Length: 274
Image (cartoon, rainbow, N blue to C red):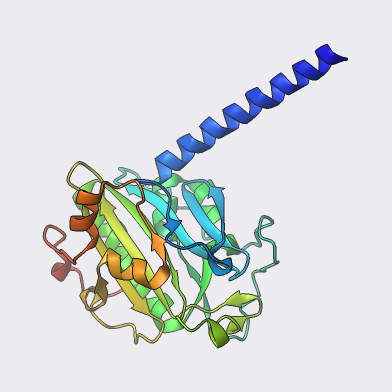
C-alpha cells in the first residue's frame, strides 16, 4: 500500500511539473517581460489567466470582463483566414455570458484579441477562441465598428509588416468612481469607460506605442489623437504591464509618447477596411 501511494505521489509530482513547465513555456511565447500584475491587490482586480490558442486573457469574475489580453503578432506569407465564427459562451467563466447577452443594450460585442489578426497569424483554432465571450467587452458602435477597427487594421496591415513582430496588450479601463460604475452593467458585464492597446516591438532596444480610446468617440477621428504613454494607462488601470522589464529600460519605454519609426501619421486617417 505504501509502495502504491509512493508511485501515485510520484505521478502527481511529475504531472504537475510537466504542466508547470508547459504553462511557463506558453506564457513566455505569448507575453513579453512577464504577464501584467497589479500595483495594489484588491477585490476588483482579482483575476484568472485563461489560456487560448495564441492568446492569454486576464479574466475577472467580479467585473465579468477581461482586464487584459496579451498576444503576439508576426508577419506571415500566406493567409489562413476562414469564415467568421459564431460567438460562444466560455465555460471557464464563473458567470454565464452568452452570445446574446448584449442584446438590446446599445453596446456591441467588442473583440479585444482581434478576429482577423489572430486568424491570420495563429490559425483557425485561435480564431475560434477570439469569439469566446471571455474575449469580448461592451463597446459603443462608433468605437467598435470604426475607430477600434481602424486601429486593429493598422496594426496588422502596417505595423506588423514594418517590424516583423509585435507584442500587444489590450483591455478595458473602468471609471475611477467605484460606485455606481461597478453597477453599470450589461446584464452581468460591467461597462468600461475606455479601452487601451499597447504595442511593443521586442528587443534589446524595444519601441512602444500606446492608445487610450474612450467610449464616446465618433469614430472618424485620427488615431494619433488617442496616443497615451504606458505610464498613463498603468495609472488608469492599476496594472504593471511588463513587470520583468529592467527599471532603466522601463522609464524610457513607458514614461513618454514616442512615435519615431512607426510612421503613424501616414496611417492615422486611413478608412476602415469594411
